[in-house]
Image (cartoon, rainbow, N blue to C red):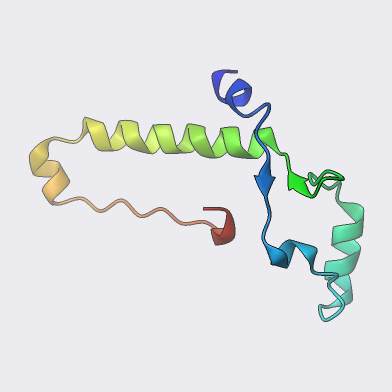
Length: 89
């Protein structure tokens, strides 16, 4: 709950791409967008505390792994963080 409570009142201003009407996208994009509940309020701000709490939790867990490495291990370790939604990182 500590992560979720942190973002209860957090709102994120989305960029211009969030206003895309998907007119130039395949029909299934528009159908999917219509079927999904929007986390964007009437004020245009993105409010999705679960999303941000989850990312914060994952970040902390990655930090725990890195902090557990010895200095010698850190010299020979790569941490690769990937996402399919880079615009949110």
